[in-house]
Image (cartoon, rainbow, N blue to C red):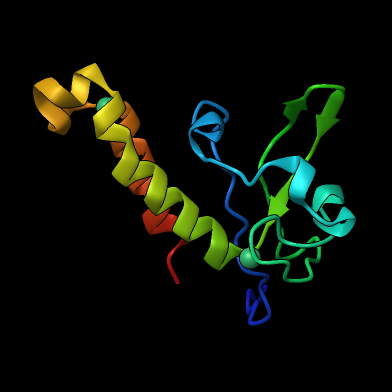
Length: 115
Ligand SMILES: [Zn+2]
Ligand SMILES: [Zn+2]
């Protein structure tokens, strides 16, 4: 009964569905095909594998849907940007940012993505 798992894959980060809309993506029209398909990071164009890609959920476009994916460092930057941008748009944060669930969730997500 040995449990020596030394070659564990890095934990994939799941972005909660209610936070996805807060993470701003580049406009689909300007993206090269590989980024629009999710083969490359939607922000930086880094090649992605299923082991490293972070799923950014299903996004709607004028004529359909797409499933952007991204690498971890770019996702981290984008989540930080969303967190910093959030209080300006949130009534709860204007009152008291300390009790805003959304801000807290974005903050926790950013910490989870940091390596
Ligand atoms: Zn990237
Ligand atoms: Zn807030």
